[in-house]
Image (tube, rainbow, N blue to C red; front, top):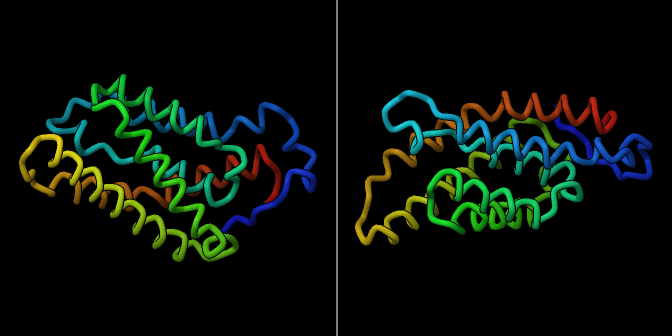
Length: 176
């Protein structure tokens, strides 16, 4: 079951400032979870793109509550804390947001399978772009295996993230 969008005037809870911060807070939590150290070899390169999951959800259902400047700041913070190339994550987040916004009308009020397929396409494009950028910055063609695995794990975990984000949206921003 897909969540429906609604405007702020139809739901008096949305005017409540803490509720309006929910998308930003979930993006921050997703970023922190992505940065959490896991004692597995190669984990940093294979970590699921939790922030991409949150970005996709909020861009479809409440894009007004997750402004581009917040995505840019979260992306810069992620790059600085992860030791990545500064600017890569903000670019990824802003391009992903633009792509989802351009197709947003197709995903609103649709079944979950359709929304999930859209996320799979976005994730594939994002991971391919990161792999290409990584190869370009390293001046060598790197193996795409880690990117393919990361994309597969990210897409596989999306239903759980979507359920949690949908429930939090329903609880804090009102019924859809």
